[in-house]
Image (cartoon, rainbow over all chains, first blue to last red; front, side, top):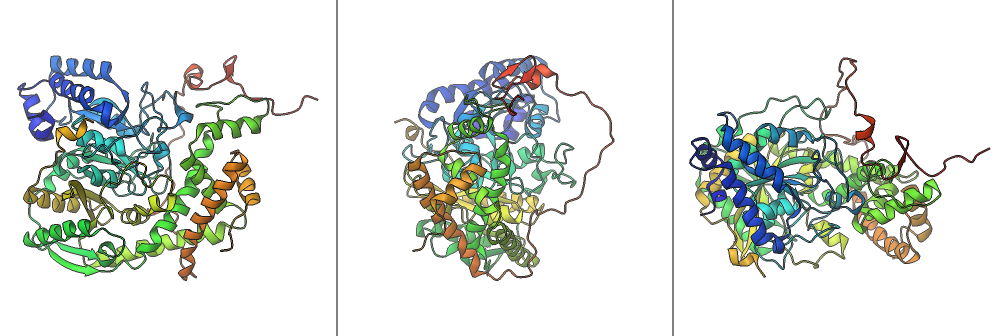
Length: 486
Length: 99
C-alpha cells in the first residue's frame, strides 16, 4: 500500500519512531510523479534536489514532537510565492518570475518542516474552472484522463488524488479549492475570509481570495489548516481570532446537529445523479443523529452574475501591476504606453483579458453604479440569506458542483456555461464564510462532492460533521491506477 | 436583440485597461462581453434601493505599527526580476520629450 494512503497522523508517528524515513516519503512522491505525471500533468515545477536534501537532513536529525507536518510531502499551487522557486500563476507574463520571499502559508508549512515537492498547475491567475486556461499544461483528471480536474486549483487536487503528494495547498476565490476537490474525489476546505493570511498569494480578487488545504482525509485537512491559519502582520485583512486545534473537533458525534438543505441547491440545473448521491449523504447524516430541515437561500441565482462583476473589477485593478517594468515579460517598443499594451496583450491569455475588460468596463465612469455598486448590494442580500439560515442551523449541506467532471474542451469556448459551473460555490465566497467539499460516492465512475457550509470561523463544526460522515460512508477514495495511464 | 456594448466602447475600455487587440479580437470580445453584461443585467430584477453595498465581509479597521526602520531589499535583489535595467535602475522607454 502506498504510504500516502495511511494518512498524516500514522505517517508522522512512524517517522518519529524511525519506522520510516522522510526519504521514503519523498521517494514515493517522485516515483509516483515519474510514473503518472506525464499523463496527469499536475506539476509545473519540481523541487526535487532541495526536497531530497531536506529529507536527508530530517533523517539525520530526527523530528520534533510538535511538528506533525515534519517530513510530509506537500504540493503548492503556483500562485503562492516561493523564494528561489519559480512562481508563474500559469501565465506567460510571469514565465520567469523568481520570487524574493515566501508567502506566509509557505513560511508556515516550512516552519513545520513539511517538504515542498513542487509547484502545481492552475488556471491562469486562478481564472477558470477547469485548469484549461493555463499557459503551460492541461492537467487531466486522475479518474479519467479525458476529463478536466476542475479549477482553478486543478493541479493541487489532481496531485493529491493521483498520490503524487500527501497533500497540497490551493486558493479559492469562487470555488477554486472545492470544485476541483469534488471533481477529483478529495477533501478541500475554503476557510473563512481572514482565517488564512493572503500575504504572498498573487492577488486575483482581494475581497474573496482565501488559501486552504486539499487532502485525502478530513483529519489531514484539519491539521493542515491549523498550520496555515492565523493573524499575520503582513496582511491587514487576516483576522485576530485564535486558531483552534481543529483535530480535537473530530469526535464522530453529530447528534442534534442542525442541518439546513437549501432547496435551490437541489433544484434546476443540478444533475440527477449528483442529487441522488447528495440525498443519500443527507440520509447518512440523519442516521448519525443530525436534524435536517429544508430552507431557502432566495438570492442564490444572482450570485454568479454578482460575482463576475465584483471579482473581475478587483482583478482588473490587481492585474494592473503586470506592465513589463519591474517583473515579467516585456515586449520592446519605443513608446511607454505601447510597451505596456504590448507586454500585457502578449503576456495574458484570453480568459484573463476577458475579465480585465469586464472589470475595467464595470468600474468605468458612467457604469460604476449600474454594475459594480449594484453587484455589491446584491452581495449584501446573499450574505443576509446565509445569516438568516444560520440563526437556527449549524451547517448548510448540498452538492459542491452541479455535475461531475466534464470533458476537456467541452466548455472552454463558452464562458457563460463555464461560469455556471460555480453556482454552488460562489455564494460562500461572497459571504466570506467557510465551506468544505468531501467525496460522497461516485456517479458513473466519477467522484461527487458533498459541500458543507458553516458560520464565520465555524471550521470546527464543519470538520466534525465532515469527519463523522467520512468515517461512516465507507467507499474508496483512490482512482484506479490504470486510469492514470493512456 | 439590441446590443449593450459596441466595438467603439470595447476599444475605449481596452485602452483604459492597457490592452491592444486585432480587429478580429475586438469583434469576438464585443460579442462575448455583450453576452456577459447581458447575463449580469439579471441583477436588475432585484430592488436594491437602500441596501448597503458589501465591499468587504469583515469589519475593517486600520492596523497600526511602530514607525521603526527595518532592513529593505538590497538593490540587486529588487532588480532581479526586472526585464530591462541599466546602472542599477529599471529602464523604460522615454517618458518625456527632451526639450
